[in-house]
Amino acid sequence: MPPRRRSASGYRGVRQCPNGGFYAEIRSDDLRLSLGTYDTAHEAARAFDAAAWRLGRPRLQMNFPDVHTLQQALDLAPPPRLNSAEDRAEHTALQRCLLVAQEDERVMAEWRRRHPEDVAYEQEYWERRRKEDTRRRRERLDRRRRKALACAQADLVNAGGRSFFTEEDERWFDIWLSTSDDTNDDDDGADDWSD
Image 1 (cartoon, rainbow, N blue to C red):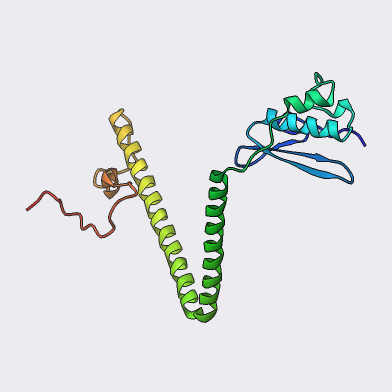
Image 2 (cartoon, rainbow, N blue to C red):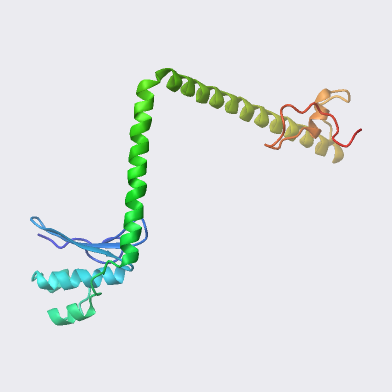
């Protein structure tokens, strides 16, 4: 079997985990041996080489050609990870969170089964919200377009050109349109400072 190509970590038998750690394993046709997770790719590669030496792999399949004996590989490999009380407490807390999430999913499934009318109402509510959000987004985009057009026409007139707006065209008022996302739809346009 040809030797495996090197992974993105730069070392044979080492992959980067989504959490930022590095996972080492030895694979062949009949063997898949997990070597654990390490903080750096270099540590994972050293652990890979030590295991490869123990399994009698050829030196061409090693990550570090400067290691000539099994004892050297073992000396350079990181020590095995010890599970401390802190690790056990973290694992217990994560297991509790997982149990709570699983129980929550079970209860929600039971609630959906018992109250299909509430589920239908919730789906209708979110559909209405999506439609309303889409309408508001389109209105904001339209106001921005109209304001940009009025501003461009004003800039053209200020530069000495002619606008296709007439002097009495109501589109000139679009220059003062509010285009911010936090405008209040219930605003009646009254000045907050007036008595």
